[in-house]
Image 1 (cartoon, rainbow, N blue to C red):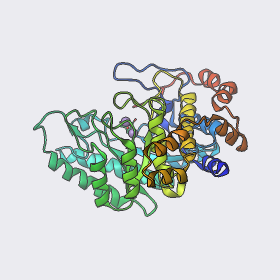
Image 2: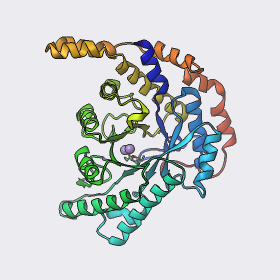
Image 3: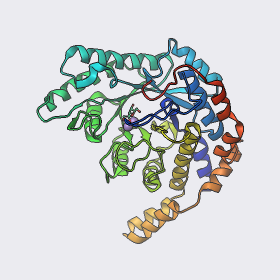
Image 4: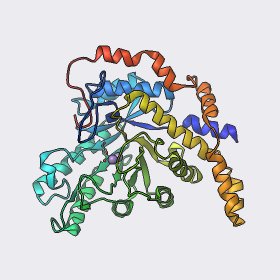
Length: 386
Ligand code: PSV
Ligand code: MN
Ligand code: MN
């Protein structure tokens, strides 16, 4: 049993978001940290540090245009030299003035065209560097009842998705992310998993739903959504983060580690942890007040801890208790796994992988943090939205 758990932990993969390394904040203030990346290349360098000390984070997701470069093949080569690869390409149709009333659902056909062209560009960038996944999130929606037709906006959305889907090569996937609200406050055009699922179902099997853990109403049972989408083979990826209130983008596993365990239990019990299962485990976080590289390392470790606990669930005992209708017994099996201290197990796994058992301490000792503060002076610091 333990060797199987260790083997699963050794091959687990977590994708890092490039934007987590730049400066970020709230709409009230961005607190600039010293030494943060000024270019996509420097973001990749920082992401490579996270992989160096955790061994399980070998890809970095890009956000276009925040990470726009002249030559993506060059960026991919640079990433490879640093021991990592490029990951999911995230489209951005939410920051231009043109998108005030929406992007692909905007009433103006010229704005819709511009937005769709950007989505197609993202598919092409991904294809150029051999990346499988293109992730779409739309800020589209309305603020006031009557502002626009809810139904017609769905038609416009469906049309944009169709066109983007048609551009995918056979190895690519379209990942559709939903979010309950924000920035739109009355209707959002892709507000929930049901809407995303319905659109993906119509598109075809290369369209899959993304669950961003911060994008639900308080109290939503996210593991139910995970279980349902897995069963329908429509779960493509996670954007992991934590929240206390809304889309807080705090470190995954920091607000509610038990929820993360429950999610990972659904993944493990559907045998969907292995990369062949096609679920991309990504982080989507902003480190507004904490240092960014160690925060990403901590986040990867939090995912590993929840996964290790989920792998420790005694599935035979659980199934037996469930068959027998033993409510307390089944719950006890579940909680036993959650209450196990898996930190020594993970330290061992890291030693087996030739890593330091304490990745945060190893990073702190490396002096990399001081080096980037000294070296990265001047220039425009790249951040969330830069
Ligand atoms: C939107 O809130 C979102 O979760 C989407 O994934 C965006 O691409 C990302 O945040 C930007 O940080
Ligand atoms: Mn997200
Ligand atoms: Mn979000």
